[in-house]
Every structure is written in C-alpha cells, then in structure tokens.
Length: 519
Image 1 (cartoon, rainbow, N blue to C red):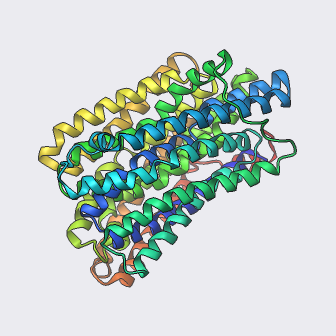
Image 2: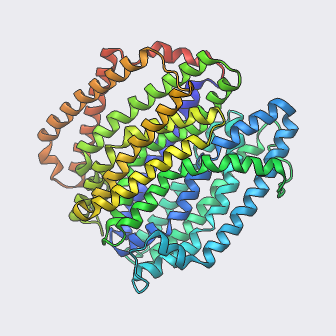
Image 3: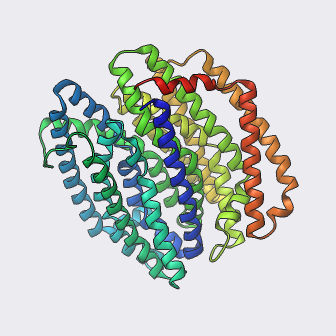
C-alpha cells in the first residue's frame, strides 16, 4: 500500500472516529451536564483514557514496530512471532497487576486525579465507584495494542485505525440507552457508562483479533510471561516513548487536578479537549500508524534523501492541517460549543465557559501537532528518550502556568498553559533533532509554511466577516445554529483550500505520485 493511501486510510478512520466522538460528547452533555455527575465521570475515566491513548490507539507502536521489524529482518518471521507472544503475555501480566492495585487503592488514586474532590463530596464517592469498573479497560488496552502493532508493522493499518470508532460506537449506544431509558442526570447513567467502557475494550480486542487472524502468517506464538534480558531491554526502550506519548494525557490529568476545586471546571476542560482532539488525533494516529514505520524503514536503510523528504512532507502536512484548524477553533469556539452541547442539562453558561477553554487550547494546536511529527523522526532512530525529555519540559510549563493562571482566568487559564506547553515541546524537540542532524527539511519547506500561514490569515478574515453576517442564525434555535455553523466551516475550508491552491503551497502532482511508491 502506498504512503498516500495509508495516510488517507488512517486519516479518514480517525476523522470518522472524531465525528462520532462529537456525537458521544453531545449525548454526554445532555445526560450528565457539566455539574457533579460529569465531573465525577471525567475523573473516573482518566485511567482508561490514558491507557487508550498510550496503548490501544497507537503510542506503543513507537517502540514495538521498529523492534518487530528488526527481528523479522534479522531473524525471520518466526522470531518476530515469538517476540510478539512474549510482549503480549508480559504486558498483560504487568497491566493486570497494576489494574488490581489501582482498584484496591482507588480512593487514593482519585485523590491524586482530582484533589479538589473532598472525601465528603458526592463527586468523590461516585468517581471511586465508577473508576473501579473502568480500570479493567487498562488490561484490554494492552492486549489490543500488541495486536494493533503487528497489524501496523505489516501494513494492515485499517483495523487499528478503526479502534477509536468501535470505542465511540459502544459509548454512544450506552448514552442513548441512558437518555431514552430515563437515566439522564442520575448516577445510574454514570454506572452504565463505566460498564460500557469495559464492553468497548472487549469489542476493540475482537476487532484486532479477527484482523490479525486473517494475516498470511500466524501473528504470535503462545503468549507467555518473559522476564529475560531481551524483554527487559524492550520495555526499558519502550518506557520513555510511552511516557512521552502519554504526556498530553498527563497534562490533562494535571489540568483536571489543578482545576478540580472549581465546580464544573473539569467538565469544561473535558468537553473542550474533545473538540481540540479532532485535528490533533488525526495527526497522532497517522504518526503512530504510518509515519513511524515509514521513517524507521528509511532510517534503517540509511536513505538520508528519502528520510528528509518524508520528514518535510510530514511537517508541511501537519502544519497545513493544524494551522487552519486552530484558527477555526479560536474564531468559532462559541457557536461550536453552543451547537454541539447546549441542550438538556448543559446550559448557556456552560457553553460560554467551554468556549473560552476551547479558544485558549486552540492556540497550542500547531505546536502539539508538529511535536508529534518531530517525535516520529526520533522514534525512527530508536530514540525514545529525547521526546520524553522535551515532553516533560512541556509538562512543567503546563503545570506551573496552570497554577499561576487559574486564580485570574479559571479553567481557561489552565487551558492557555497547556497551549504554551505545546510550543515548548515542538520547539525544543525540533532544535535538538536538527542539531543532531536527524531533522533535515527541504529548502522548499519554509516557503510552503509561509504560504500556509498566509492562507490561514485569509481564512480568518473570511470567517470573521461571514460570522457577522450569520449572527442572527447563530442566535436562533438548534437547527439554525447547525445551518450557520455548517456554512461557516464550509466557507472557511473553501477559502483556505482556494488560497493554498492559488499560492501553490502544496504540489498536488507530487502527492499523487506517492501512489506508485512502495514503502
């Protein structure tokens, strides 16, 4: 499969997942609102969400895929299959032990996740009870991750890319059952959602299991726990990469913890983050499922020209997606929040607060997206430590900034600190990679990026003008707001696409030529 086709497949699947995520979160807003129930569920969902990001949705690829490819190239498919079985069994054993400990000490875990929840607070008891159900997903995510890694390494990216879709479909079904079953604004709805998280993990495992069973060769030998030097070396190498990939979610952990003393703040951060994750999630999925294997192949072959070209196109693609997305989220934060969430238990004040958080987050989107691309280049050279260190530096910025800005700006201040951390991540990692000679962009890349900035500026002017013209519709009912928001997004996208095309920012013929290149 060509690089372009893989990127298109993963990008399309992730886009579908994020759209379904909007549906899920709109239903969650209607069922749980932005009060105590939603705050408690957001806290209970932190551990499985971290596992989902680190494992089931691709971050393990950073260490697993290069290691799997190396074993297959050097020792043949039997060695790769045995390696998969050892990773599968060892990871399952470790995660099962961690999940059991977390369930046993869940009150202390929730106290760390949401220190603003007082023990006598109803949110605390609900979060502890629901988290004891959801933590089981951590084990399932590990099993899913190994099978998804094999699929990505063999070029079968479709099933792994569809994992978030499966998760969202199950959650939507549970929310619909709660809404139409009379459970809205009751603890029973949260319990149903916690059980749905476990069911979603089982569905994801079935999805990748069926896909792996269809591979030409058996994907793994009998799973076993291996504490030998080879496996310890793999997990030592995987650890920094997993920490680096988990920093965005750890940032959200920290944001929820910092803001948990403010009623509703955790919910506002959650809903805004779901919107923010649309463009970020697409690039992250492509980086994990497509860019890491491709860049790793070029690095292993010592093909500097191909590696530099792939990095350049990846940076241009990432900036070309992230910058207009950030502009759109800043300018349309209020109508987006009102249109998607303002119904049922979610009122106008909740929409305004969510919009402020979303606009603040959006300023950091290009930085976070570019950091994913630069990290993929480091992983291609089996360097997982550098992305971890730069991500930790960004985490320090997010925590310190959030603590300083919370008193004056509330949850929006915490979001602004998260945005600043994205730029720190990207700038520091790019500087280190360039100094080591591992980031070599084409001479045309700065010109392309300048054209992207100019096109995004034109898009911003067009959006500001059309938003004024559509002000009446945006103040109307749900149908009118949906119509106006669709028109605004369509107008912004059309202006941006026309601008980049007119300026020649992207060479469409060159992109089309990628179809014939085998990776």
